[in-house]
Image (cartoon, rainbow, N blue to C red; front, side):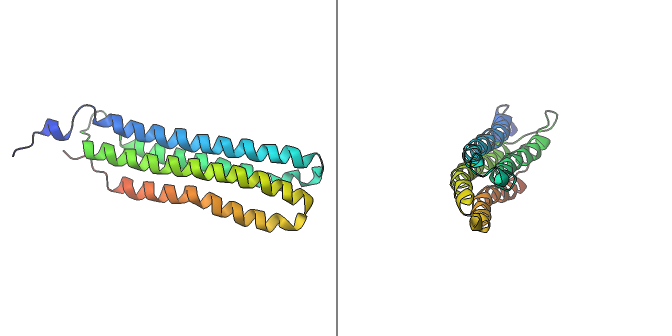
Length: 164
């Protein structure tokens, strides 16, 4: 069976690459926004009782913001390969959709966990200041979920080739 070049590189193939860009940005930003808002609620609640701990309590908000950066990095990498003057295979589109989804959905999960853990740990830290190191360790384990998604997305993206 002879495969035509138009079958390997249909005009709609780049849609999947753009969907990967959108997935990485949208899902990781939703996770970061949820983590920031949920941890911010905890900071506001704990800050009324212990205002001197507010600066140390900003750690979950900073870590939630890093999740959105992971999505931004993957989106820029994928978007850099989208060139209308070059051929774009369907295989590449699916690979880049998968890499965008891996970063985005891992960022969504990490943002949710950072928000929930950040809220609880900030409130606990306001009651017992010895819990700060524990809070940092738990937040690191929540943050690394997003990093795992970024690593998988980068590995997937290296498999993409635009040859038809």
